[in-house]
Image (cartoon, rainbow, N blue to C red; front, side):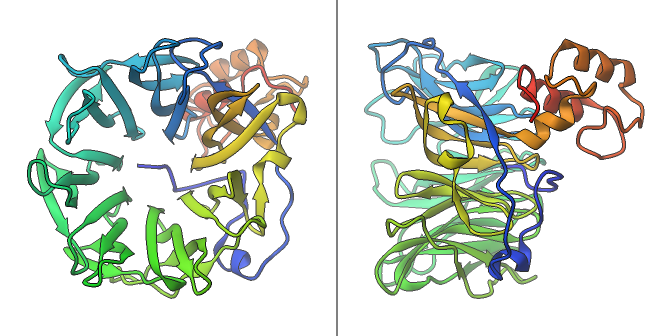
Length: 398
């Protein structure tokens, strides 16, 4: 599951976003999530980041060795760590992880039609079914999709709970796919209608709801937060795919979608939303963030000296950190963006840099309620604050 309960670094969205309230430009530092193969690896896709925790740990996959096509599930919490596929398979990918450190993903060999769903606990893979997981919530409930029969091109959204894989159904057509689940077990994704069009759905208490479109024929829901705000993309009346925001009613149905616009090229796609309603995605191959106001190009919120091209933002945690993919010095790479406000909060001794001196202060105050080291402001100095400090380690405070 993507992490969406609280964000002390960003203003709430809600009606302020829809009313177009002005926002302050948050600047970000950039961390290169390099592939297992090392910093000079040029083989595409290099590294791909798909999910992140509150402490800035990132899950995804990366190239094992330059010049080869082997991909391994990867966790970044500092240096990249490879997660091996199941015995007999060549490739793996970590699709999602929760705060307890449970990771779900796939293991496969090229040519197989249905990858094997895998759960990694303590770095060791175990098979959990024949489906493709896409998200996991804090209770360890996962969702994704699977083929309806061997060799079939038809797929059905599924939920994995208590070791059992159960189908979700469709909106009257053949196919469906579950993309996300929140801690209330509300699921979102897309499903085909009787006409064959794909529509965003929410699934709650055994009932699938059609979330509609922006006037066109197609929509897909990609993420949901704990406030039942849903984001994704929908085609508008002009035939353009635009990022949308929708608020679910208590029964799981949705209020009308809100068009989030685009950066000027005609298209946009929202991929994630955190607990404060901060939304990330891509618009015409430029990563964007919406944080209490208009859509902003993330390329304009990092230093040009960093030599990054930020193409897609795929996740945002409740600390305001953003993950995504692009290019660093022309090489395919994933990134972790950390708000400079977080760097300021982690500079405990106010000397302009987050370093071992700040780490020493946090360790000395660990377990206390001293606001000096309570970086996330939850009233206790704990592992969450330690993770935030480590995520900002080595950066200069603004």
